[in-house]
Image 1 (cartoon, rainbow, N blue to C red):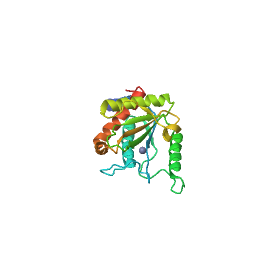
Image 2: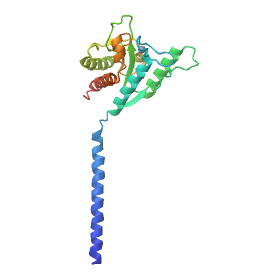
Image 3: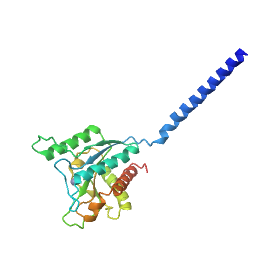
Length: 229
Ligand SMILES: [Zn+2]
């Protein structure tokens, strides 16, 4: 009688261990399929900052440096959600320049270059808001560095996605002579998200829903460049 009871307990413990082991194996095996793991490093560069506010909206006085940062953070959140590793050139409204530097613009640009070089990224995306003397100018425009085939491919993919989802976004990417593009050792684009000099876009660009939708489609362009989508 005593031995039978002991055997029963051994059987119960063995069953429990078997169930426990099955649960562990199940979750360990299935976890990698929950998250896509592109494992790409993306530098997201919010243009301007500090004393350099960039373009300013006429009606609301919204600054480009603020909106660039908000768009950069939104895009970063989406990229991270899908398994990308994100490095931001700036994460606050402070300027990237050394406050004691005689030439702040030069100091700021060198800092951006340093962040890009140190993070060894797969792609660089720089975020800006546009401005033009005529208030009628509107729509997002994507730029790439002259002579960069991979930069153009990334720019075209993002342009197509933005154009497919936003009436005014330009389908054709353009060559842009921008410092961040010229110093990036990988496919890099500069996205002018819209015109702060256009009263309609000035309001639209500040709308959180629009901001998220815009960044989402920008991200879809990145995914299609990698042929993940
Ligand atoms: Zn700008």
